[in-house]
Image (cartoon, rainbow, N blue to C red; front, side, top):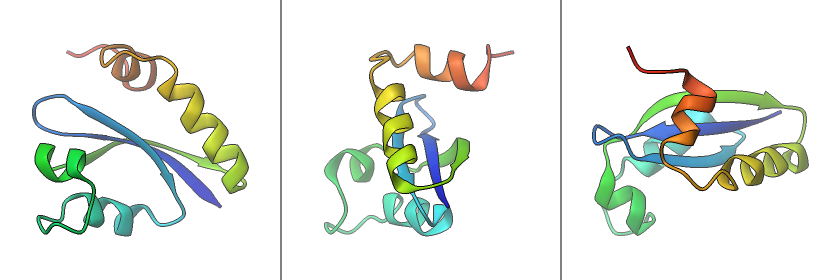
Length: 85
């Protein structure tokens, strides 16, 4: 089983990805050393805002691409998380 996840930082930026181990992926994105990606390292700390279980990696990758096609930082939270209160 694989998960499609949306991570958010305190500034409201979103990161969309897929993984088979959500806690390990979140810990990797919150690392401060130079091993992980620049975007997540510079823009953390990240928290899990949304996740969806998928039956296989192919399905998870397709869902991830679909979400990324929305191409709007405002669309992702509204579509997946609902309006802010």
